[in-house]
Image (cartoon, rainbow, N blue to C red; front, side, top):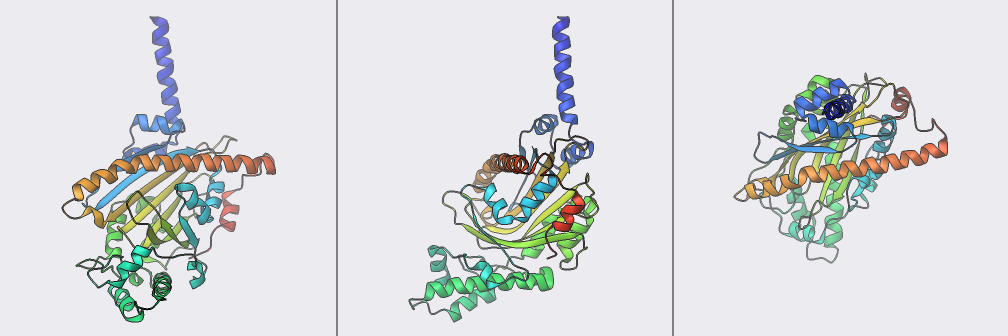
Length: 374
């Protein structure tokens, strides 16, 4: 009996020790803001992905959080994130179509983007208040006036006009910030992406508290602190059977200033446009060193996502919400695990080619080599 008690005590101590491997400040953050319990924290410290849904105030909103420990240097991960095309293709299966905007953006950046045949058919009968794509009223009217739908070249003209619209939206945002993001008018009442985004950010108050420069840049862009860097990209992604691919434009902002080699680094993904389903979306990533004194590099990646969708409105909203929520945590866990495996494999390969210190660089060097201002 004494041996059994001793063994049980040892196992309990080992479990507590494993959980304590997570930095105390991160443990507190996850407990308070992600509602991780002790089992979640033990699983996370052991290298397992942990994901769960978060409560929301708005009926059309879905929120989730996921975290995983990745055995690569944090700077190595940031390097991969700068290559957004490759990074996005690591996340999903099938891999999305992705393109990074130049600085300044050019129409050629969108050369590979094309609408689906069904989307072009929707545009033929598109009217403000009744359109199959999320578009501002002025853009909807432009499709009706400038395209001769009876001509053989109508499809090519529709694709050209859609690329021009997306480029103009990105340019307007770079010039005027949120004021350049005109409302969608595909349904009866216009939907303000900006108002929805501000509410999403207000429901994540820890960003203002822990990353004030990033929070300020998200609201006041293009007036940003010099330490907040970023870029813009477009993507076309498939999210499930029976759903149309979603073409979107997104701004990525990374707060590298003031973190040091061992501090927290924040990244935000702010949706500037989506042609289906999503009214507004805010993604946040937190990167925290796992073991400051160990020679073995590792960091904790925390991903928090909040989105509002027009499919969560109407008589079937309850049923649709149940389906979406049922897949959010599982899909997030799968993506985090896929990212972990591919990053660790890539880092091991490069480290073996470059020698024992080939993958490690200081945060100072990383900032100097990092993404440019947007």
